[in-house]
Length: 228
Image (cartoon, rainbow, N blue to C red; front, top):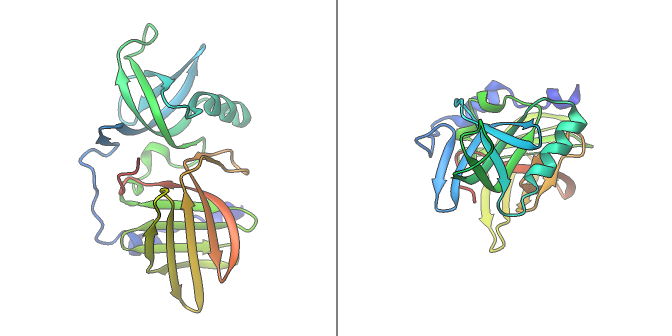
């Protein structure tokens, strides 16, 4: 399968992740005044959507605190995929209440990612990554941290590049590099994005440009950046 061949191998990750330190003292969360960022499993229980954080046994009823579409997107993705549970990367606040048998309510203010494929809670690299982006037709995948970016495309094996980053006032970011005869630009903007091949929901729309050729996709921030 083409998509699986584009997943970045451990040799590329070794370069990218060398010398990088986690920015959070907790493997599954980063805290701010806007709530806590958590990864975990989502599953339907009757009319309720429940969230179980990674490495915990507690379940929380999910509520949508800021028009994130978390509930409707979860229902649609689970129905389309036939999956019993989904992996979710969310920001929100704990509140009291919830149905009998739950441990409270998790009021979601931001959805970073929601999917039924991938390593989920067992991803050993999540907390070291600042950004991951990808798209289809043609297939491409970019993995970024403070040390550099690794790019793989349908017709090019993975390559590592240094990059310059610019952040715009509207929250968009531009990452650019010129190396090996290529001009590479990755643009991401804070807009909900749904992967048309997998149904994965991500928090950033992305566009990769290689020597001026534009390829659309989706992206999300990893655990090495305190993304709101």
